[in-house]
Length: 329
Image 1 (cartoon, helix red, strand yellow):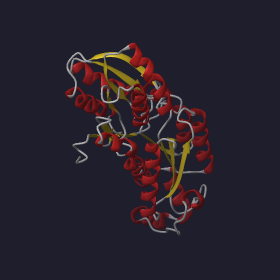
Image 2 (cartoon, helix red, strand yellow):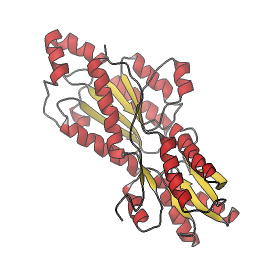
Image 3 (cartoon, one colour):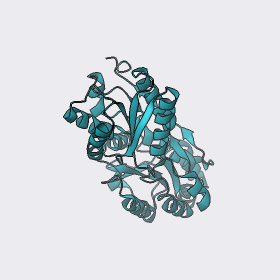
Image 4 (cartoon, helix red, strand yellow):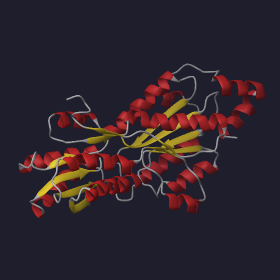
């Protein structure tokens, strides 16, 4: 029995609680989720969404999707949406989890900034009876086992998505072409998986990976590291970027170097800022993991666990290739 089920049973009685579980009754007026939620009580479960940097359009879109879902389902749950300013601020994310537990939320849906560092605090939340669902960046399996906890991952197969993008790039290159990978944060599982997917596609197509370097998910860092890669590898034909923010930085660096068009660029996330670049031919492709629905998938699963007490298990969500052709250009 979940924490919220126990509270419902204790607060309103068995018959009313079961009716509420089945029909979602007893809603109060919807308002701003962060203001309307009341810690540790109420007739609806509280779900905290904890994201990475809201400076990244991907996570802004994730938040907007979650808030739209809540607006349509205000009678089912209260939503508290939080994000960190810096995608590398792991300590702040840990603090947010601790704050949500202290606030008395029933579930936490988290896109962890680090696959290992967030396991401990999530385990502590579970020990307090909070349901935890992991989205976007999968928590490290070895650390989860070490902590003795099972936290379900709801998200796409990042390796498969990156391979799709890499295979599309390979169609535009001659075998043996030199390519470079711009990685995300090396300790992030999704960064590791995207790098592996790019490598799968490039190796299968007979390309030569001449460099692989982290830009830590940041546009400015990608713009900084691409020029030295170009200088070291003048025959470079493509840059495979593990997210679209870094792809934007790569495009800016190539434009500055007069190499845009000569060096192809692919990304991952399908943020709106890259869609026009793909239509214009300044980028070749990206992967869409449906940011507007990713948090929703996690929230829906958290609600299902809260309402039914079902044993959690991983759930794979869609990821699709995006090109000028698929966008109808």
